[in-house]
Image (cartoon, rainbow, N blue to C red; front, side, top):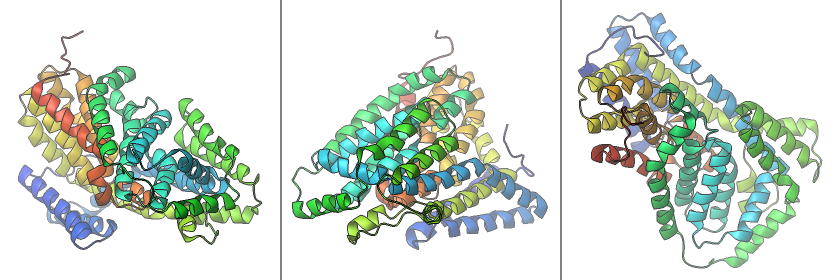
Length: 461
């Protein structure tokens, strides 16, 4: 059933104690001591290795677990490389600066957060990638919020909510296709069924962002005008700089693989950069690795536009490898399996099955920090339980997305949480209270499970 075979079978009490200790170590180091997530994960890895050695597990088996866990993230790591290149390319080509400038033409503080949420929903739905949405249009919105002196935490919350709405509901999304494939449900039937929880979460979030949006005019209009003028002085604000973004959407619709889409878009953005300024090939290579550096002399603009590059992804990549290696150890030592078997054996009611499924997806996200594993593991573990209580598999697919896909960005040490923090420069704990859509989705799926509403049973046609 599980991707990595366990070498031992710990008791539920041991598995629960170790899991609690790992979560406590991470929470204490990150919240209390303001540590980067890498250190508590390393401490957790050492804790698990110590436990394994005490249980007479050969060290080479523990090492294999670490390596096997890390292997699961290689695909994501290559995508991160190309996202770093994409961000620096879009900066160099003028795409993101143009988006920011256009945003200032049409967006006001009135309903700002609601507009951010709506636009990121549309972009996320169009391209099916939450992280790409955050790294492109999300960066532009953070720049606008910074220039308008509007809360970056709420803006980031709206960006994350919209991006993961798209990640959850787009037929182009990896997670959406993965969830439907695991439980063998038609993709579009799965998307339609998710509407029962997604649509209420969408409208509640939209109203919330509308209420929180500023209701006053700019206090420093002159400063804002200077910011817009500074953007124009870069010489990168042109209509044609939006071509790479259009290309990215088209490639996504055509279901071109993510790495190829990111690479082709980056190449086009680099070529477009030569329309407004010449950069030598050696400079291009440096920018792609170290990131684009703005030198307008205006501190706010230079701070906003100086970003991207492969090097900017190294923090994220290191953390992904560590988090997944820890996950590999958790599987190798049978800790995850022990926890899931205990949960499975105590489920008899529809409401308890759905609640347990949701909490398992949330737990895997919290413990391992990996979005795909939360979907895979939850889907594999609970299919039999859903069948026992007479629930159709599309209910399971919906819960997997409601509590798996959209919860990952809320975990500070998760793949998505770290990536978003790195790209938007807003910590996970800062934007978490304002990621309304991500918070509401698991709550609504559990509530519908308790009431029995919107559920489909096996005997139903």
